[in-house]
Image (tube, rainbow, N blue to C red; front, side, top):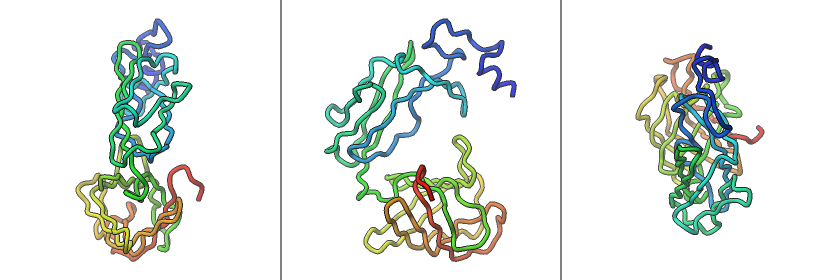
Length: 234
């Protein structure tokens, strides 16, 4: 609570002398942290923030963001309002786009990886909508990255993740498997080899056991988990 009051403008906060300055001295200017994965033609908001620690963000007025540049040339353009980035329709899948800019005396840097849906169909953030197994804690965040990494979290909070690793999908047969490389909360007896089927914004992982944080030693079950893309209604 004390830290929150300080960031909000308590006695230890830096007094901004002009609207583009952060409320806390030494704060960093950010768009986002990890590279975003977006398809060709996507439009991405360029809303910047000041931050001095995880979970603490202060919105930067759009007029304070200057000198925005995109490279390589031709793969993306700035929107007419200067507050968005538009990925070119013909941007090659796998390309990494770099965006730089400035807020006051701080540098903004971010990246976007172009990912064609056909090349990485699971890429994105998903949340569990249902399961064929009764009870259990729903997975509120399941992230698949195009380069083959995944992150699973039951109760998302800032950058916390329960366990993570690498996954593979055979697009011809639907065979899915994952291997855990680390975790903060990793139940025993996980079974991450099964099948994946994708239809629109719905993903089903079948014949797998993702675990349950309330039963860390539970025997593996054979479940079908239905997920929807983040931001999409069940």
